[in-house]
Image (cartoon, rainbow, N blue to C red; front, side, top):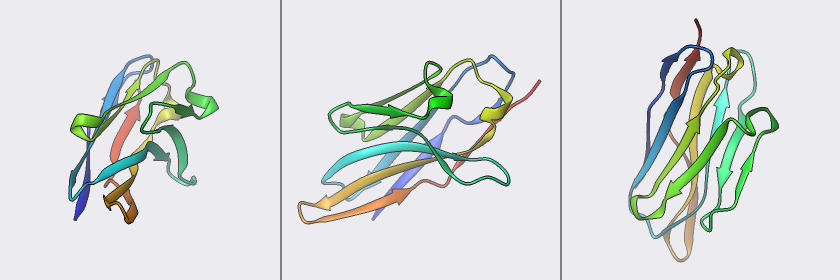
Length: 120
């Protein structure tokens, strides 16, 4: 089985920074796309940033220039460095990954979510 375990959320003042981490563990053959989504109260879950195995990245317009996604393939871990945080960044952040447990079997997985609150 595969698990995604997130860490790094918390309370931060506007303008501050946080770094989220998400480590995949279990029966892993390879990991393709890894990403971060967020869901604020009363809103739909939205893509924040994603990164391919080769390093190509994609960002939501609302976080471009402030957030940076990266990954360590040797550790099966994806990171989200969040700078210049705003109150509207407050949400539960979820890790997502496309993971193959063999050359013929792949599944999309979600982490349990980590709360990020931006408030003075």
